[in-house]
Length: 387
Image (cartoon, rainbow, N blue to C red; front, side):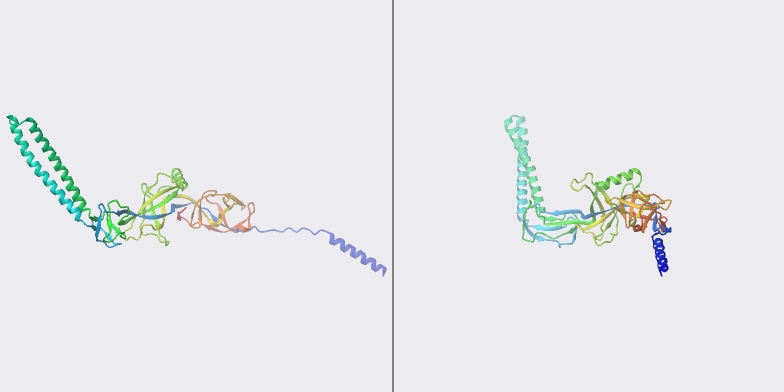
């Protein structure tokens, strides 16, 4: 029994000693994580700038009276198209007719006086030659004749002025276009110096679109044009496409008419104006629109999917790419603008780079990865670039 206990103790000791020995390490091989990549290839893109703006009428005329009086008639229907020269209102012409007749009478009297003085001056001229009248009397006759002739010129001007004022009692349209509501009715008293317009006429056959571009964007565009990264699509014109409030695209293209020569100090922007044809009057003044300005094109644009571009703690863009040895590399990027779901990259990526767009949560710079399912850009593709 004692022998059996000794053997049991020895066996237990050996077993405990075996348990204290470290296990032999077995090497474990980990497979490289798979990532989806996008192979960068330059492509040709049209460079455009999308900017908000408002429409305004091509021509605007506020109708105001040029003489005072009582409105007798309104001769148009509000909201209709009218022609230049069409009579819109009639002011009571009675006092202006009377003034015209009075000035005509004064003018006739002046003409009669001149005729009499001309005969007298002629007779005195003959008599002064034979000393039948004094020289002073002849000079007085000539002076009276000249004064009467001046009175004729003055009265003629008065007649013309009275005739003009009488014509002004018929208020006509200065331009063709669509007239708005009338601010007065028949029987209203109007004055020549009033600030309130009787009605407003707007020519809508063509329409302006005023938009703004930041000075920073303007400088960037100038640098890109100077360096050759962007080439103008037209030497003397820039086409503009219009997007309406409901998201639809306006059927006709416009042309950039001018760009501002000064920068607004409060907003740091430059005003641009484009003109669009508007034959059906679909565009109305005051509408909110977005103008897409064709700035030029570039043949070597680097486009990167947005899911492959990330931001660091400072908000700076960066991307992870697969290097030649299948190791992950981090690249700092410079991005200009977006094109749908892609970034236009100006620095940081090159042709042939394998941009990681899938599996980013399982990797970090420096590890070896297994690129799978490469996403190739369609050959010969082109895109429109917008800021």
